[in-house]
Image (cartoon, rainbow, N blue to C red):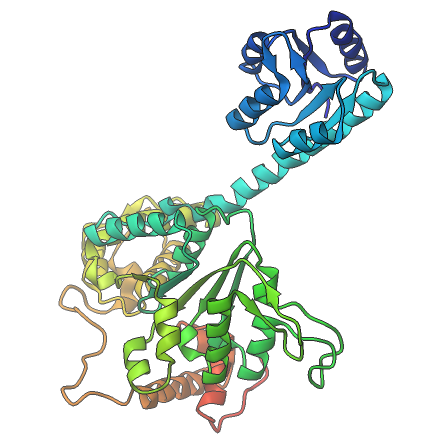
Length: 457
């Protein structure tokens, strides 16, 4: 770490001078202090590492160590002492010292210790910068909206991020931004340094989902040729995001409940309990109250998941946010596609605000992306959003009949139509339905559709 600043705090001038000459020879910038007062003044200019004497004329070295660490928990301090003992070493390490050396010391050994400590400092700063860049796309500023509902939502998510509660349930229609909300909570919490693991429960067959979540031991089943850690184990000290948790099979619901209650689990085929510290954020677009009443979802798991319930409103309930979302999206697509779209004209904006947006923000994003990519004008007009329908008179997407509908039958029919229209191409069918290919494949199996999956073109 070239040109690092090292502060040497010792009341003996000879020791300070010797250390300064040796450390400057390695390219470091050395600051000196003979008292606690001088040391605190020198620290205002910043130091990458502190070499601190155990006894000072006006202070105890351990006391100053506490003050340094309280001001900056990332500060590295090496304690120098002529009174080394096991008790001294334990006390120094307990207060956060990087290491300690005993006087009289060998200058070369101290120089090597300083080099290792500065390398640790450099790595810490690189990791911190990397984590900052990683979390930047998921700050709460990315949740666009000034409507009262969205202001309330962002305030609630901020409180949840700062809370120690380990379970969150996000509800809302498909496309309302549950994935973004989950990531924002993770990266704004004290778990941000840990992993964020995401799995869509409906996209993984039941037999594999248990292994994906909990892992398995070698030989646990036919294809288990080696031990595998599951997402819960890999996410220790981080967050697991369970999307479409309402699709989870009853047997797996029971195992998830046990984990939430005990914070421990067994791998598939394993005998030993594994304990982890994980926050679980579950999400669903289903009515779980109805699923519980119908016996499709365990009530005890439902109540355990909704320790902190959060509902994300559909876009049609916050139409005032449409102009803000459109501007945000256009700015992003201009950068991505190197376009120069300046905005949306009044008539086009009326159409966007009046549309029912059954696919919510995801559908709006797709419409804006298509318009920016294919549009030839700086200001987008109604013709750039021709696929949305005639205009302001549209207030919804599908009218629910008074007698109700068979939703499963409707879902099966829509998947069938999408497959027919796409010639059996699952990727194209997924695009028509606003789903992932895995979600379409899951529904093909779920409804036992006669049309066999075709090779992708």
